[in-house]
Length: 290
Length: 130
Image (cartoon, each protein chain N blue to C red):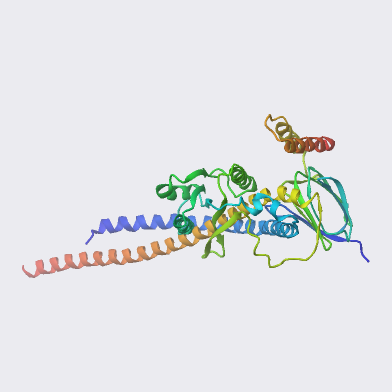
């Protein structure tokens, strides 16, 4: 059994760990509120953008001549996967979930004999993927210096992707991110952004639009923007999910530390009591023998 | 019959402005300025750098935009833009900054004709505000 001194030291150490996790939980909760707000505020833009593109692609007259970002390059050999993770750790299963989702997708691509290229956004994803897929990673983007997700950063990522597409470095692009459902649930998502999936047109309108200039030109102008918008949306969802995941992970850690302190305190009290009893017996038996 | 319609301006971060007592909006569409009144035909167009003017019951508002898309449908005007500034709240120093970045872009050597045109357009519009 550990000595009294050792137990005392352990209790103090667990208590200070608990203080840290508690503080982190509170910081995450405050940040979560902000991240959630901006994720909600950002939704109208991406929804409207999607709507406009849906209307446009329905109205397009010449399907064969549609812009490549919409219809694809005609091949599906080279896949680009953009894995979006956080820059910081200690957020429970947040990064692991995205990586798991991405890896199963990679395995599927490998079985089908497709070529794989990876772009990682956020340093944690890069750390976890570079061991197994180091030779496949062609770019690593990290925004450690920007405090919140902002459109400017998303636009940078979007431009990099489009540039690569125009150089015909890949045919299909999929982004991986966590969708924020609530504090304890985040759903890892794989979303194809090039070519654009226009199958899910539930709210298809029959309205005919007038276009100025013509559809093709608007589409050419709009599609690159849409890519940045989708990435921005993923970034916002991701940052809300990250804070949510961190908050619940830190809440768990705080609770576990509390349980541990209780257990250790009982053990400490028991051994103290045992020591006292032992001393008493020694004294009494010493007195009796006299 | 009222002559008002709704306008909503959204940027990626938030819904920038929403009004439902608008009588006329002038937007800098790519092929020239375009005035939109109630019951305009459904239209989609995109913007070049310029000034959006909104006439409403509560007065007149002016905004500077660098790019964006307008969609008008069943008396709802949506403007999607990534950079928009309210002229009333814009400070002189901010204006100078914008002019400077636009000029730098315009003076770049390897620039496509279209981006050069857009940058020049920005400078032109911004200088008139000065």
